[in-house]
Image (cartoon, rainbow, N blue to C red; front, side, top):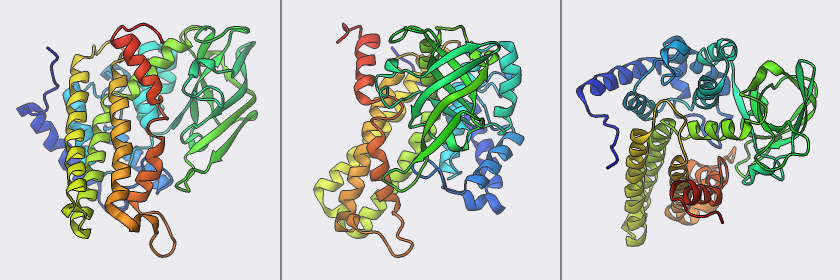
Length: 394
């Protein structure tokens, strides 16, 4: 029988109080202005202040909490990581700007990188001084990532990169990106792919922000026209890209999802408060959907805890992490639809100048992408069917 991570022991309770007290003290002064800011669809909010917050977290030792101590992390247990992310979200602390480095690149380098790469690249992530982005999807290779065509050619001690990536979150603000590229001419699908770390501020690399339905521009197109990166920035061997790239996605769906879920709960509570204020709570159909949404976020939490308890700490997360991604993305998208129904006719209007979207409207519009980005629902179902349930390939 699967275990569930326990966060209610006396040791974790003491740790929870420690985290809670530090956050209460830290989120004062200028940092109090950052409370609740940032996150999907809102990454433009107080970005410089949130960079300063990231470095404040780092100085206090609260970044990279799950990394082993020998790599500069705190080496916290899964239960302690869960507690930290839950308390972080409950404190209304701003959305982290260093999550991609902390939760994706760092664990990938620890698992697959060389000693030299870890010595060179992990400390700036740990200190909040280097921001990262992901360079996976392409115009013709999104859900079908194995169809990517961006290529890298060896030229002495460098790789020279040509091609295009798209939907790269925060690429316009990143110092580094991690890219899946094709290094074997004539290769197809999963073969011949390599995992390269690329400096984002160089000639031969152009970044064009994409304006989304919410009016924000956190996604980008990235064009490579002779951009270079050192051979020392190849992670693993040439041809190992698919294996390493999928491991990175598995790390993305680790303990950070627990903090994300507390953010979901906060959104739900705001919608329930709105429903009670505008009378929508009196409608049995909407009240039933709100209760089901509450049940859904509880299921989400316990499913994540069980997945984390079953994981082997010494290996990257496996395909079971796709279950969590499929569940939360569908639930969150439905929450956005529910928010519009609770608002009723008011959902069609924006308030006075400067005519910005209210939180419920941003939630609805941005969550349309939840079932597409970070792996579409169709792809997640295929992964679950083939690699978790052992069903034959479609």
